[in-house]
Image (cartoon, rainbow, N blue to C red; front, side, top):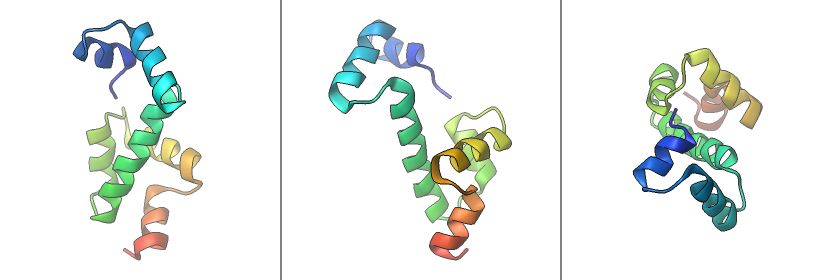
Length: 89
């Protein structure tokens, strides 16, 4: 999972400057913004039946269980439960 410092380095700015810009423009902290981004990306991948392990790896989670815990906290159910209820597969 990319950290604020990695993003800031890509844009040749300090972490503090990037954090302020994100907060000003999207009204979220970096962590909140990144979580929302991960949910959107995960949902896109779930919709096309990407395995949960692959999604976890692509988003940079240390383990599948860490990703599942994050997902459940955000949406109230596991990725598999969400996929079955939403798309039936």
